[in-house]
Length: 263
Image 1 (cartoon, rainbow, N blue to C red):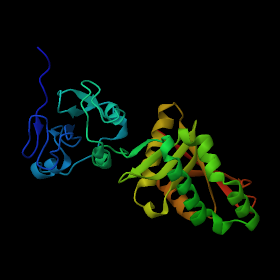
Image 2: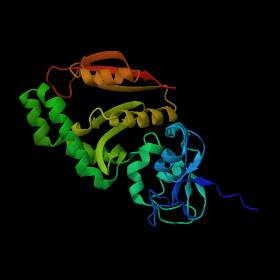
Image 3: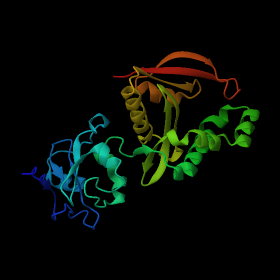
């Protein structure tokens, strides 16, 4: 005999896990809640029926079978679900792509994904936005003109964009992170989404990936004038390991090397 189908809880459920809150044709995904281990059709059903708040699955547990296809009853890991392009890997049933907007309720960092070619305009816009708000006030006029004339954001995205991880909010790309080895080269968040948790989600992904690759530490740089970023990284456990002239901008700035022990 095959394995028994998981019992899904919810409000006004049908046979394929559609519920009172989400009941269109493609709404056929149920989630095993990290907080209680019970399967629910959606977070609103959990809110209505459970006596405790929802908890998201941490990235380190994304190998757990926590997502169910309402069409075939098969389960998949969080990682498999996030990579499935809105179709069940077992039966090819289509899932609602709009569920991407709610992933952060169920999966920590669930709104972070690899960059796609079509993200390039948004990525360039983010880099230009952070240049204007953070860097331009600190630079010499010569450095500013070099940045603008060479269109460095476009060149950076063209060269490295395929290796970015990006964060989405309501379907909009609002942040990016890029690392190589144990070194985080870039973390940028659109100004409209600063201090909303985007930077933390992106760094969670970067640090987890660096640790998974076997590195004991993560390294990155910021500048002495950028007290906001220093406070952000200090809150994540980074400590200063060195300081030296910032030669990238040729504007008399000083770079800080920050290091964090992982694991």
